[in-house]
Amino acid sequence: MLPNILDVAQKYDLQFQSKSFGKKESLAKCPFCKEDAGKRRKFYLSLNTEEQLYKCWYCKKAGGVLDFEVQLSGKPYQEIKQNYFGTCRQSLHPAYRLTPYQLERIGWKEYKRNDFRQFQMHKRQILNDWKQYTHEKLALHYAIFLCIAHLENQQKRQQELLVWLIYKCWHATIPNMYNRIQDEYLKGQEQGPKKWAVEGTILGRLAWGTCLETIDFDMDTLFVNIVFLQYLRKTEHKKGHVPITEGVPIGG
Image 1 (cartoon, rainbow, N blue to C red):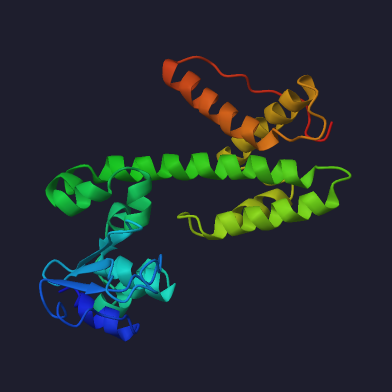
Image 2: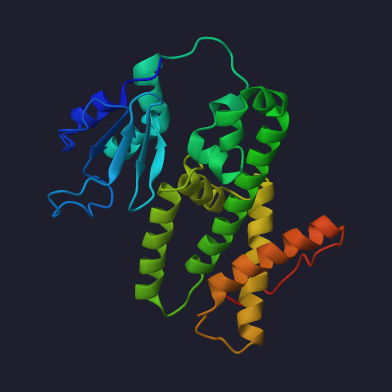
């Protein structure tokens, strides 16, 4: 059974509208956008006490009670889930272990919520979709990492971009993404590269070469080129065309 969303809200000291407290729709001040903080009669956060759902009518943030506590606490989804339901001893298909945030990225979140039977029937496809998504994101961010590492005479910009990339990876839905990228970059040549690292290297080289060809020596459009080239390669792959697999050496 899901935890009571009112109990969770009280646990984190949310401010309620007294006349609606305990009803099917209980109202409270939104702790996310805080747009109603200085408005005495405004309570933008709606808590559905029957279905254990929340929604802010101002910032549109919404979800289930477990997600609600994740957002309030800052803890990982699996940790919150385990606190209420414990560790499942039964071996589960990996698709069932994907969090709502991960399922949302690949378009399967609503399936699990609205038609679990269909979700079960498509679990293999769901897992494949997640693996493909993970591959693409790792390749993209590895390309960005490589390009940052090879920027010359831009030490301040290089440091700022690296901090930005680390932050972006830490808040991604792919576990340990930055560590995986860094470990791949630092490992010895005797170990074969991951497929996503190979693709990321190609993307980085092509993007770097595009900057040089367009006389963008400051590399201002470098990251835009990476994103566009990945989209282009993905489109060409779907059409069955063979994409370009070479580029100038990064830093060359």
